[in-house]
Length: 173
Image (cartoon, rainbow, N blue to C red; front, side, top):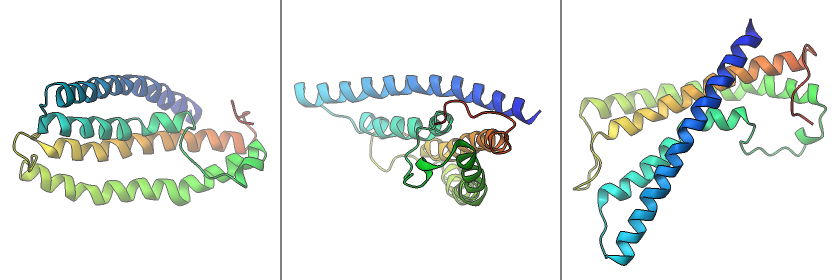
């Protein structure tokens, strides 16, 4: 049952991450358009400049779980790289509960009032012509960390199975 939950989370994150990747195309188009208008026509808009960093923030936050699924997060693994796969699974399992889950919960907990206040005052860009509803982009912090935490649950389940020897880690050296 737990392993099936991990597979379901992984499948969801795979679909979600591929969907979020389209935001990268949108970001490239927006940045390209901004550069063309700025240098060829000497025109620029605050809205477009803010849209660039909003799209970057969306991609960064919404794809974090997908990145974790594919084990592409940066890690300093001087000792870890030399461990056997089962020992790596034990280390990952312990560190998920000691650092990862508490960190995700802490970010969500501390971000909630920040987003709530932004929503209550209908915060928008302080710059004329900027993007309204800044609370929407701020709320993506919570969504991103919920998605990351969800993938952490899947990773914990898989690491438990690998650490106990119930399953061989796929793709681990």
